[in-house]
Image 1 (cartoon, one colour):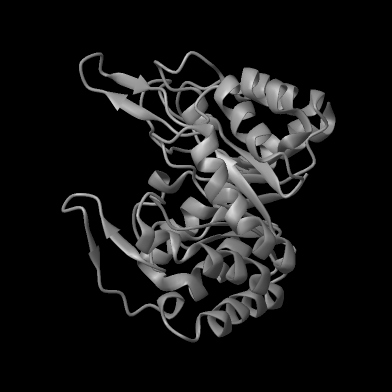
Image 2 (cartoon, one colour):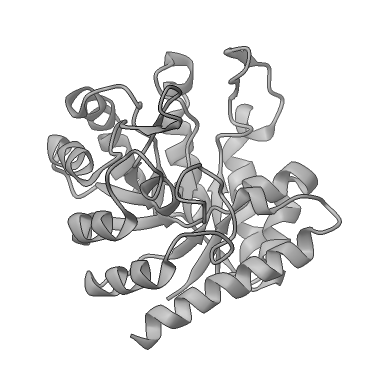
Length: 286
């Protein structure tokens, strides 16, 4: 079992180039190409788009993806997957999804995670995925949909959204019914109070459609994105369920809240790699 982590949290402090180097030095086998931060910027507070001069937003975006691939290879790691911009309800963001798929291929990744829109039906989200699939196939990149959540302020807990439980997730996959649309299970999302499911239930329901993971810990209530084994999720049970279905993807951390500063980052990344390796070793030993 190989381990990976996203570059977004590290790149906030040192940029993507250095982030890939540091992730390699920490002991990861691969890096997850975060594109939702800089390819197109959306301010959730003001609900407005922000002008962006990042290479991913410019005309030389493929050259930048190739550069990151080479940095990874020079340091002994590869890109395993990516994360496209969201929320895809906006046409402005949807216009960048093919670019995200193209960058994934250029960096060497095999899967691009593209969120469904929380409040669309399986059929409506399927229209969006079906439009992208011919391009994804040309790039030899699979698209992974992910389990989402809304928030019920009155009950102070998560509320159902696209793919938030096993029934909805299967409906989304079946609405497209294509080998190039697969599942990315966000472990933390699956464990949030109010959604009526668990990561173990989701793993078993998804079976061989489960080909990517976002792994992080929480208090089984909020979307904390913390380091596994530091909060309340039972990762031993989840690892056993993954073994039951013969999961053969990567163990990819999305513990982005654990990265707190530039100064502490090397030690934080090393701890993350050690934790991911512990999980991988547990999986391999079963």
